Image (spheres, rainbow, N blue to C red):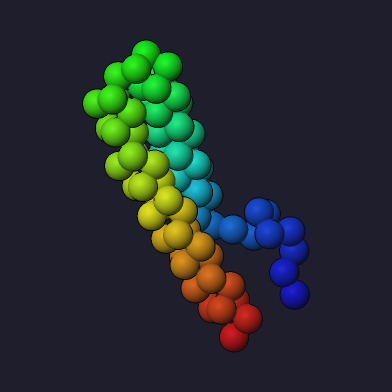
Length: 73
């Protein structure tokens, strides 16, 4: 049926997932730096970055699900 999950994924899906994980990681780093430096503005600024990463990741799951359903038919 399907080979390895990552091998048969499209380039768009891979870019979407890497971008999402990168945004989540960047948001976490910004959050940690903001809290270590006791900069509340920086800590709060990290929340939209993390949220955007989570939304992109959910979009990646939806794209992948659509591709798999299309391949099964």
